[in-house]
Length: 173
Image (cartoon, rainbow, N blue to C red; front, side, top):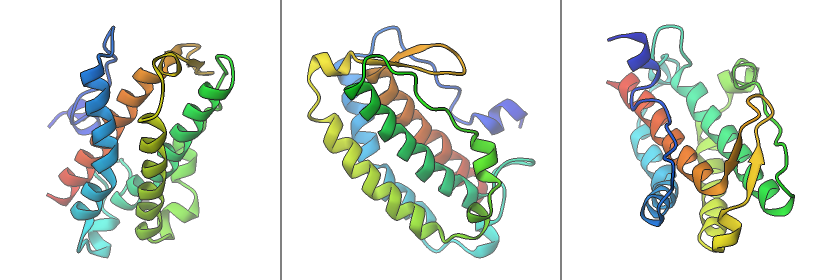
């Protein structure tokens, strides 16, 4: 299998020109069920499987789980910034550096799964109550300078969930 397919098993995120209500609702539903699906996938995982990279040179399953919790926590904050500030420039973070910290190698994944459950409950609750005007709010990513609206952000984190779910599923065979 080629490196691109290993890195992006469901393909790279590609934002549609327009995010329909149907696509948005599908993304929110996926965000709602993702933590439970991930928990089921990881049930009975061994220490050896946890410390197996999803591809050569890639993160271990454990690192991916901890990354998901941290990344989705950041997404929740990005939604809040965009909803409370006028087109804010969000704070980027070095995902690779975070993944190399000791907690990613030693912390139980149960902590990050529980964190994901809670952050997704909060995120989905928030998203289901947004008005049409709130969905149009935007933020700027400091590394790319790109402006993104909240509808696209919801799709991106739905994709991100499935992207890493598939990494884990592939690593577990």
